[in-house]
Image (cartoon, rainbow, N blue to C red; front, side, top):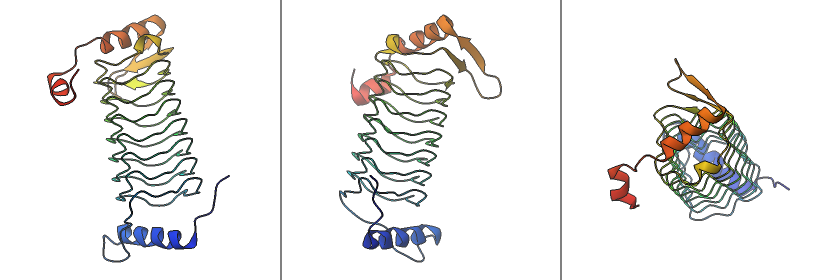
Length: 224
């Protein structure tokens, strides 16, 4: 069951929101180490530019919350609700989004490097230019999701559902488990002129992209 925000915490959140809205002229930046915010209803709050590495947000409700330009590395969002949240340019590397609901999320240019997102629902979201390298994306629902220009190098995608997903210059080289992923149909190409691939044609395209060699820069940085 979700909890209401404690008064002291609410005051700190409101001070941070004022700090962001007034371009640092008023209020105070939210500063904290590892915090336990599990089960809290934080819907619609403004957490942009916040730094909360290692925060526990398991089963929290963050519906419509602005979490852009923020740091949530090694955080935990297990079974959290982030529908319609904004995570633009947010760093959530090595975080856990297991079974999280992330419908209609805008996460353009966010980083989920080595994140554990298995069984998360990312349907109808914008994850273009996102870095999913080395992430656990098994059983993730990518239906009708924009993953154009995203990176999936060495990500685990077994049993992920890519039906209706949009691809364009998406880096799938080295993706693990693509042979077990589902894609009834996908679109390939930029938004103005997408090409629809269905059934076996969609599957063959995904497998061919996953079989491409890893780029030299990735191997140099992360190894094989």
